[in-house]
Amino acid sequence: MPLDAFTPSTPLTFGVELELQLVNLSDFNLTAASPDLMHLLERKPFPGNVTPEITESMIEINSSVHTSYGPLLAELTEIRDTLVAASDTLNIGIAGGGTHPFQHWSDQRISAKPRYEYLSQLYGYLAKQFTVFGQHVHIGCANGDDAMYLLHALNRYLPHFIALSASSPFVQGHDSLFESARLNSVFAFPMSGRAPFTLSWQEFTDVYFAKMERTNIIKSMKDFYWDLRPKPEFGTIELRVCDTPLTVERAAALAAYLQALCHHLLERKDEAPAEDDYLVYNYNRFQACRFGLDGSITHPKTYDSIVIRDDILATLERMLPHAEALGSVEALQHLAAAARGGSDAAILRRHAEREGSVEGMVNAAIGHFRGDRSA
View 1 (cartoon, one colour):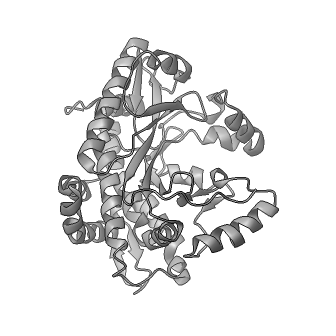
View 2: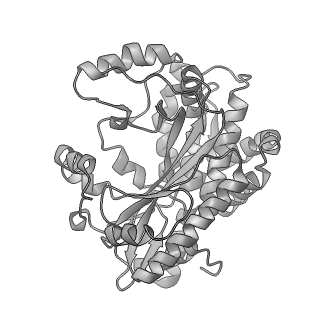
């Protein structure tokens, strides 16, 4: 069936989704606790929403739709506090981070939901390997053409979000040497990567999507695992490259940064996005995943080489007038401090060294999520 028309939404409204780890406090491995946690949460009203994820050792929290940073952070904090209280009742831990450092995919159980069971049948072991944890950010768009414009204009900045959220250095008990190893699991899926280049919603739906639907590979937008994808039923674009940060403060700040960038890009003062911008896209994305803030990216227009940390700090400075208009200066200051001080991946590596084990690192991540400033 044809793709639904793009449902207009209030421009620059935003919301956040966070995938979180459920941890056994005895051995600090993942635990299949989402059914028990969901049952307990049914009796605890709180804003937003919590849902099961593809395996039973994961949950996803969804914020409400917001217009500004402060209320989003307040809501994420309230959801966090509700989850922490419920996890204490069940004697489990909840943590951010893009990967659990030593879980094995074969130990995971697929959640009892028709779509997840379908994905397990389709993708085999990749479905269980998808026990990785990301942050998604939705930005409201007035129409489909604005959505496609932002989708491609943002490609220049995606390494910023990878580097600023990077929190998945360990895989299967070993340091991967990546800042964000999580994205390597996402890249294994055939419909990952980036959207085809078009700035017209009608061309995207009537030509590209119509062709893909005829292949019988694609049935809905959910079948695309792109780094950025349109969500016509919500009237948004969805950023999907971020690891789940260790704290809700970082998650809210990343969302506010994306909002500020979109505020700037919709003024259309920058050179318009073009197909050739993607010549450097995969290289830049790899640099951000592998080296994080220390990576070097190539500017898609000038081909200048830029250290990601320097590019982030310069861009945050340029976005300050937009942040002032949107009420998110504090969020950009938070990210500037993170860019100078180091990523969550660096924090996790320090914990692993200090505690002498990956189990100790997981325990520290649980403390960070709880808001324990001493963690």
